[in-house]
Image (cartoon, rainbow, N blue to C red; front, side, top):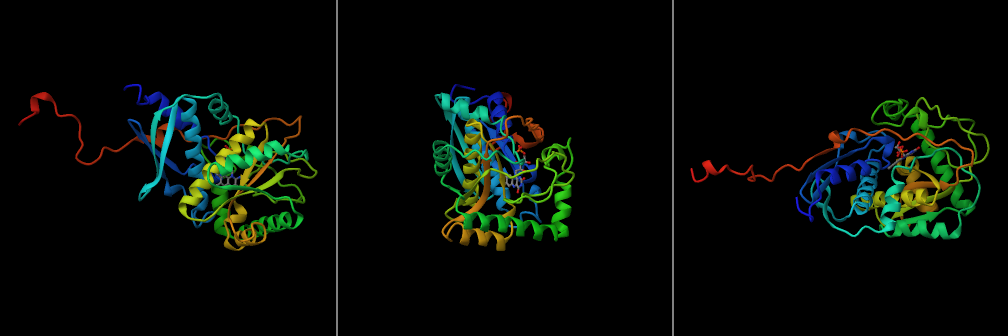
Length: 338
Ligand SMILES: Cc1cc2nc3c(=O)[nH]c(=O)nc-3n(C[C@H](O)[C@H](O)[C@H](O)COP(=O)(O)O)c2cc1C
């Protein structure tokens, strides 16, 4: 290897940080391949949640989160990621790694990766400083998406109604419930939402109704949730828009963590066409496509930290790039010319 090609340790370390990205139900629906300066990201279609995510949006958004996490990790290790998205059928991204002068900001953002958690507990009602809100919105727009803060009462009410309606429709769907039970409630599995990270549902509180997971064990606190509600939206709803929305979600979540804000994303209101359309038309004025809800805010001061959720072993998700057809091992000298 020369100084223009990353070594195995660097690529493994960057992918190990990339897979700390959030994913729907912690399904980690990705597969990475690597050879030389090239890293490729594919969706692992076997991990799509058929009944939760019928149109595959959550899967692509999750892969987009991991893609952005990878670029952040690589930059902190001295490699810039040149990404081509959907360069060929079945391939989400081909990443070319080129040497890069690491800056303090790269390291600060990468340091947020292991600190970030999906925190579903209620937050304090301290407002976000205007400066932080601007920084969060810019982190989304730098990735081609829009982060819309939902402040006006009719908009908040439309969003919370859509979330409540989606939760009710899901509850009445046995296939959804079976899938949810398969992907949550275990603490020692390498994937899924662990019981210790899922909030016990108390009596419903005003505000955003969040997805209920099986076997939840994380104690909730009574009282209102002071979280700032935002919607991450894209101009369209193509596969590229969804992947980019995931990259933007990662940028927003890591930036929030760097600012010492707690956060969590939610997709339930956008998994059903009727509730998704409600948010698109009544909150986003029909102009933008909702991709994720992002809750951000300050955790109460005395709150215990959340444990990290598990990930699949790196050997399961990172493999060597298959050799192009016709390119084999070097032919030994003694066999040449035969
Ligand atoms: C596309 C997407 C959709 C998600 N939807 C929800 C959701 O509806 N409700 C929820 O509580 N968490 C949701 N999450 C958060 C995941 O459950 C979480 O990332 C995963 O369990 C891993 O935990 P961690 O983020 O703490 O590492 C979503 C994450 C992604 C990327």
